[in-house]
Amino acid sequence: MKHATDCAAETRAKLDRWLKALSGRTCERLLTDWSWWRRADQCPPEGDWHVWLLLAGRGFGKTRTGAEWVRAFAEATPGARIALVAASLLEARQVMVEGESGLLAIAPDDRRPDYESSLRRLTWPNGAVATLYSAAEPDSLRGPEHDAAWCDEIAKWPQGEAAWDNLMLTMRIGVRPRVVATTTPRGVPLVRRLIKEKGVAVTRGRTESNRRNLSAQWLATMDAIYGGTRLGRQELDGEMLEDVEGALWTRALVERCRVAADSIGKPVRVVIGVDPPATAGGDACGIIAAAELRDGRLAVVEDASVARPAPHVWAQAVAAAAARWGAERVVAESNMGGEMVAAVLRQADMTLPVVPVRASAGKVRRAEPVALAYERGQVVHAGVFASLEDQLCGLQVGGGYAGPGRSPDRADACVWALAELLEGMQRGMVVGVRRV
Image 1 (cartoon, rainbow, N blue to C red):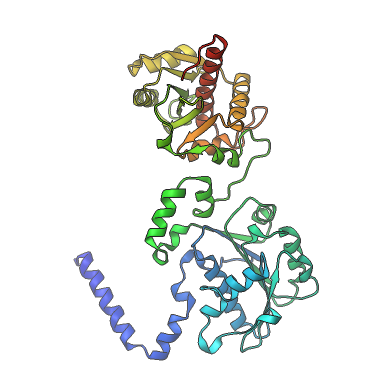
Image 2: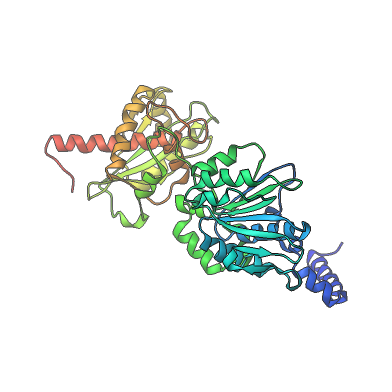
C-alpha cells in the first residue's frame, strides 16, 4: 500500500506532466476560465431561480462572482441587455466595472468589453450591452428592458425596495431573465423580503472561505478585533442578524454596552445566575457570572453554561465558576423545586448561599428593569458572549421568546444574576451604604 506522501508526490508529478503538455493557447484559456478557479460556494445554484442572492462576508469574493456571472452571460448571449446596479454610479464604475475584480479586469483580451464612461455602458464584441444604474435614482430604471442584471451591495442601497421593484419590471426580455444580487447581509427591508421570496436562491458565505486570496495579517487583525462581535458576525461571517419585534434587548444596544474584558478592574462582588435544565439531558443549563464594579456599573463577565448536562455536571460547572470569580452567592431558578436545586449544588461541595427565584411572571418583572439598566448604560459585557446575546435579543416585552433554541436558559441566568446585583445595590443605597 502506498504512503499518502508518495501518492501526493505522484499526483503532483502527473499534474506537472499534464501542464507541460498543454499548448500556450490552452494555458491562456485555462487562466481565464472561471469554472477552473471558482470555489463551490461561488457556483450559481441549480434549479429554476429568478434571483440568486449571495449573502457573504467581506473578502469572500462576491464581486468576482458577480462579475464572472455577468461575463459568462454576456459571452453566451449575443445582443444581451444587462443592468449593473449599485448604490451609486460611482460605486458601479469603481467596483463593478473598473475594480480589481470588476468586469474589465477579469475579461480576456480577445473578449474585453468596450467601456464608454459617458454613456454608462459596456459593449462586448458579440453585441451584448451592460448599462450602469444608481439605486439612488430608482426612476432611471423606468423604460429600459433587460434579460439579466447584477445588483451589488443591495443592503446599502439608499432606496432599496423602490430601485429593486423598478428593476424587476424591466426584466422582461430573453428566454429566462435572471438577477444576481451580491451583498454583505444587513437586516434591511429589501434583504429580509428577498430571503423569504419564492424563486430566490440564497447562498451564504464567510470571509474565511477566501483565506488563500487574502492577507493573513489582515485576517488575523480582523479576527482579533471583531471576532464574535455583532459587527464581525455580520461583516466577516455573513450572518443575517435581525432584531425581534418587541424585544427587550436589541443588537445595537448590546453592542453599545460592550467593553474589553481586561478593562473592568477587580469586581466589588460577583453573583452566579443559574437556570437549571428541567430534566436531565434536556435543555442547557444557563450559568452566567455577573459582577458589580467599583465605578457602580454591572458587568457580565462569563458565560459558563453547559449543554444538556446531567445534574452533577451542571452543579460542578456552577461550583467552578463561583470559585473562579470568588462569588458571594448563587441565584438559581427554582421551578423544579428550590430544595432540589440547593441539594444538587450541595453535592458539588457548594458552600455559598443559594437564593431561589421563581420564573413565569417573576421572570418578566425581573427582565424589564434589567433591560432598562442596559439602556441607561449601567450594564456592560466584558467581552463577547454570542450565544447569550442571541438569547437576550429574543426576549420580548410581556415574557415571550423568539430567539434560538427552545429556552432562553443563558438569558434567564443572566437576568437572575443582574437582578440580584441591582436589588443589592438598591438595598445598599436605601440604608445609606454604597460600595466604592
